[in-house]
Length: 317
Image (cartoon, rainbow, N blue to C red; front, side):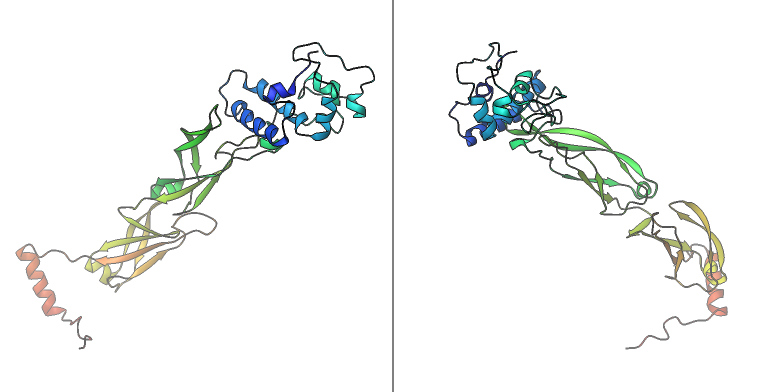
């Protein structure tokens, strides 16, 4: 097998401090992380960099590695020196996986306290720790009908992408989000794993705040729907059964006899759906027919004579 010069892999001197090693690893991990790198050999380079850091950031492993001396050079065939037992007795372990190179396993053993079985397939974060991505927030505007029935939306986000030099730039991306039926104004929907990507950890979450656009006919208050219903004077006076629109379709509603303008009626459970269903409130608005013909004016004069009333009799100063 070939000897691996871990110092050369990280681009540091053999006398580098732990801070220097950590800094070099962070820079290279950003460059070759498989989740963000566009380098063709990113995954292989990331494993190589991570393996080098696995050894050099640990004082005991580094000391064992340094016992080999500086006579070995990268690319040379390597055989452990006689009597070498995994770096001074660290011990060989059975069942090695391919997370580390054969060179690493020959030094430390796959099952030893310093060996593998942890793997880099999950991609370590900086400093050997996994770094979960940041959560992101966005807003989406839907119609009241969509809030009632549920819908899907394509949401456009700006996501950070780590460049080869370690700096970030923002790139647009789109995700399809399912918005459940019964969502209310200002509610936040959590979309797991659709936030910013992490370094070695999972992506953060997306929190989508819902805005419901004003409606030409209904007014929304919490989970309740409000509707103003125009009716005629005789429907208000005599009572009637009228068809009333709701978000779920037309339904019959009884208008009590003698109803006055502004009277409010409730349609239970006809608001936004959910564990606690909203209601629909219907406010009556009496519309007076226009006196735009002689026959209509004659009818109003007759009502004045036969139905005398003074709606202002209780007013005072």
